[in-house]
Image (cartoon, rainbow, N blue to C red; front, side, top):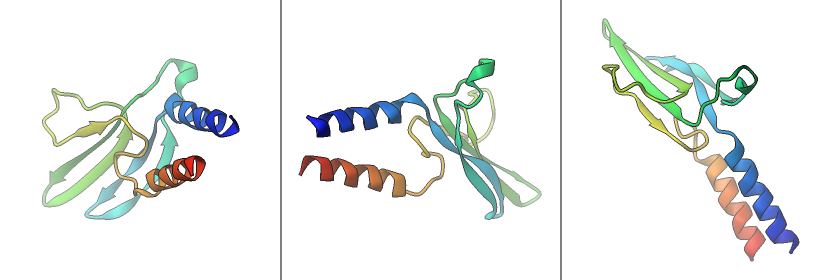
Length: 106
C-alpha cells in the first residue's frame, strides 16, 4: 500500500512541471543550468517543452538550450521535446528514476 502511494506521488510530481537545460555553448565551451520552466507561471507564462538549436556565424557555432517550443517559421535546426532535461542533460536523472521504481517493486 505504501509503495503504491509513494509511486503515485513520484509520478504526479514528475508530471507537474518540466525542467530544462538553459544556457549556451560557443564552440563547445559554455555553461547551462537546470531550470524549472514553470517558474514564470505566476505571470502567465508556462512551458511544456524544452528546445535546443544552433547557429553558425563566421565559422563559430553556438548551441542554445532553453524552455519552450521551436518556431516552425525559424530557419534553424531547432528540436524540442517534452520530458525533463531532454534538451541536453545526461541520463543520470532517468537512471535514478528507473532504479527507484525497480527498488519499489522488488
